[in-house]
Amino acid sequence: MSSGKHRVLIVDDDANHAEVIAEGIERVGFDPFVVTSGEEGLSALDQEEFDIIVTDLVMKGIDGIQILQEARRRSEFCEVVIVTGYGSVETAVRAMQEGAAHYITKPVNLLELRTVLNKLVEKQALKTSNIELRRQLDQKFGFENIIGNSKPMIEIFKLLRQVGPTNATVLIQGESGTGKELIAKAIHNNSPRKTYPFVAINCAALSEGIIESELFGHEKGAFTGAIGRKIGKFEYANKGTLLLDEVGDMPLTTQIKLLRVLEEREIVRVGSNETISVDVRLISATNKNLVEAVGEGRFREDLYFRLRVISISLPPLRERTADIPLLVGAFVDEFNRTYNKEITGVSPEALAILSRQKWPGNVRELRNVVENMAITSQNQVLQVADIPTQYLEEAGTVNNGLGQLAGIPLSEIEKECIRRTLTLTGGNRERTAKMLGIGERTLYRKINQYGLRDS
Image (cartoon, rainbow, N blue to C red; front, side, top):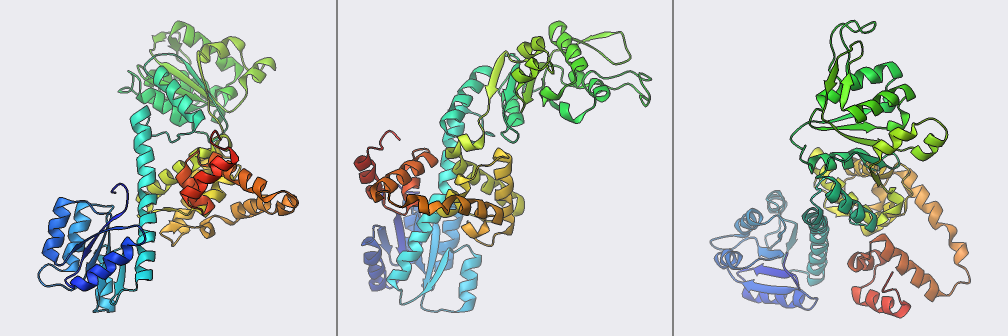
C-alpha cells in the first residue's frame, strides 16, 4: 500500500467521465491518476503502485478485464472496481470471478463510489495490519510461532533470546491454555539442539507405573505386558530437548528417580541394572503452584530448585488484552488456510467484545472461538453476530450496568472510555479511534484534553 493518500488509478476511454470520477474522489481525500486507454493503464502499472484501480470494462484494445487480470497478477493488495455502461449479470459475474472487488454501472453515482472505496481501504488496512505487526514481531524477536506485542510478552521474548542458546534447565509456569508447550518449542528451536528431537510427555496423563516406563524405558519381561524392550523418552530425546508437561502431577517416587537423572545424567531402564548416559536439556511446565506443593509435601524441594534454574511465568490472556487483536488476526489467517476461507479481518465492534472477555481458557479458548466464527460466518469481515451466543451474553452482562453511570459527568465517562480503549489496543491510537468511532485528530485532542498521553 502507498503512503499518505490512497493512490487510485482511473482507466476510462471516456476522458470526461474519468475526470468527473477523479474530481469526485479527490474531494474526499483520495489521490487519483487518470489514463484514457487500457494500454496507458498497463503502462501506469509498470511505473507506479496503486492501492485501488477503477477501470471501465469495455474499451478498445486492452479492456477492463485485462487490466483486472494484470493488477491481480502484480499485487494481492491492489483492489479493482469495474465500471461499465453495459450492465448485465454475465459481465458482473465474470468480473467478480476474475477477482474484482466491486462492480458498478455508468453513470457512476459518486456517493456510491466513495462508499465502495472507503470500504476497500478498510479491507486493505485489516489485511495488512496483522501482516505488518507479525513481520515486526518476527524481525525483532525471531520467535515466529509466538504471538504478542504487549509489555509482558516483550519481556518474555527478551528472556527467551537469552535462554535459548544455553543448556539451562527451564521451568515454565502458567495457567492452562497460555502456551507453555509453544514456549518450550521456541526455546528448543532457538538452541544449538534444534536439529535433534523435541520430545514432550504429559505427566498428569500417566499412572505411576506407566510414567517411569515412558521416561526411562523398560526391558523385556520387566513387568506383566512388557513383551519387548522399550526406549524411553530420555533416550529418544538424546542430544535434544525433553518437555515434562504438568510436572507438578509427577508421583513422588518418580521425582526421586528424575532428580538422580539430573544429577548423574544417567538413566536405568525399568527391569535393568545397566546405566545409560543421556544428554538431554530438560524443560518443565506446570499450571500448579509448585511452592505450595513443596510446602504441602507433594513435590520435592530439591527437585524444584533443580528444575527452576530459569523460571518463566506466562501471563493469562486477561493480563495481556493488548495482544488479542494480533492473536485474532493470526488465527483468522490460520483458519483461512485450513478451511479455504477468504476472511479479511474482524470488525472493531466484534474485536472490542472479544477483548472484554475474561478468557479462563486463555489463548486456547480464544483460538477455539475464532475457529467457530471462521467456520460458521458467511461474512468477509467477522461481525458481532458471528461471536458465539454465550460470549455475547457475557459481554451484555458487563455492559448492562449503565445505571451505575447515572450522575457521573459526561467528561469523566468519556475520559475513562478513551483510557480503557487505549489500554485495550496497547496504545495504538489508530485502532483506538476506529473502535470509538471518532477521527484520529479528535482522539489526539481528547488525549491532550484529559492528560492521557502516558496511559
